[in-house]
Length: 301
Image 1 (cartoon, rainbow, N blue to C red):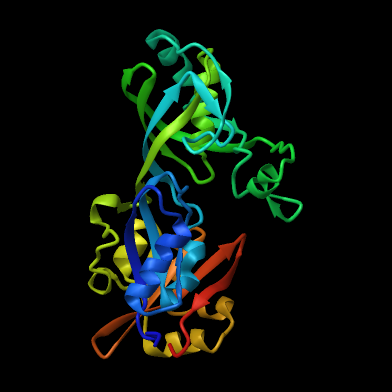
Image 2 (image 1 turned 180 degrees about the vertical axis):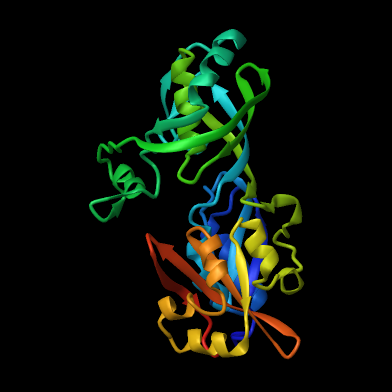
């Protein structure tokens, strides 16, 4: 029997060797719910933070689309695989680079860069995943796209293995980063291991693994969540909350009680209601140019 009442966010520590889908199945079973989804896939070989939304909180997935992320990875030089990870087949070999060559290559990958996603990825081509096309024997060529690397640190180098730390924008493939660093250093490589340690302000050290406990680890949708996402919030009274729940024109509401909050907010604003001494989450609204629109409002607000 499914639990229709449970709702919130769960920080899950996915172990290597399990798909993100498989990890979600474990969460659903433990919480007796079929309403659970993650905010960003981790490759099967990778481990680390899988930020999961449960119940009504699934509607808040758009808030997590633009999150920055942090990783720790190990690059193995000398061999490039077709998947750019340890599960693939070696397709190219080259000498292992010197420490100097490696250090000279890294600055090119800091800041705003163009990156070509791996052929084995979830990027869609003509409605199909690139990985499905590649596994079917088709030649996959993906266009480069702009991404940002805020921090790229070489922690250690014991040839052929280099340990790195990366802080990056959405859309970055660390497998592609390993490939491109190697090519710039005159070598070939694949990503031997990867751990995601942070998503926005959410940390791996606060996550639970497959042993749980799950239900007690669920956190509500609260102002702390919005702070970790760096999204501003406002608090309205019950009358305004009910007007929002009934879809009242936001342009009119924004001239009223929480106009000042809207003026201060950037593109997204979390809304809470305080009534009878109790504060609860109502939903979020978004601004496009000069117009505010509803992102999501909890039913029954």
